[in-house]
Amino acid sequence: MNMQNMNMKKAQKGFTLIELMIVVAIIGILASIAIPAYQGYITKAKFQDIVSGAAAVETAVAMCLQENAGLASACDSAGELIGINIVASKEATAAYAIAASGSGVSVSATAKPSAGSYTYINTAVSTTGDTQVVWTQTGSCEAAGMCKE
Image 1 (cartoon, rainbow, N blue to C red):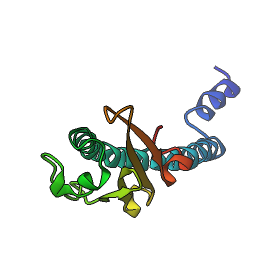
Image 2 (cartoon, rainbow, N blue to C red):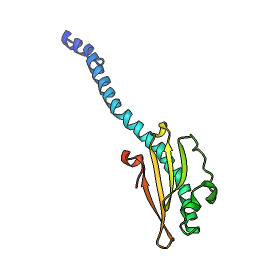
Image 3 (tube, helix red, strand yellow):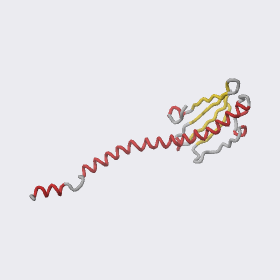
Image 4 (cartoon, helix red, strand yellow):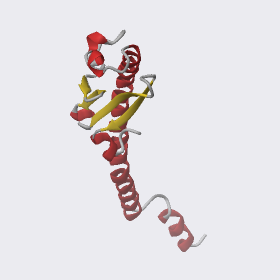
């Protein structure tokens, strides 16, 4: 074997420093994109837990409105609703409230900072001879894309 072939075999045993630095830079760029997106998904998941928690209250409000001929003032507190015990969520990520607003009843949830500090407000109004309840959703969660209409 000649000397040139032996030198070629020795030179190709590993990665160069520049190749390793390029790989580290690529991983850093991917991480800088992925981490904020992941944190957004985590916040959205926590907020959806709040929306799900409000669903039980909304069902009770709808039942109360139908049983009380659409009278909003008869359904504006947890004591007037059937089977509802409003408590803070498991991780205390929101504060829930029920209030009469005009001819409807609003169920609102305000998220803690860990869930994005968004508000979720769903207002029920009895229509069609007090047999149908129509919900209107508002709050800062809509503009942020955290809750669905």
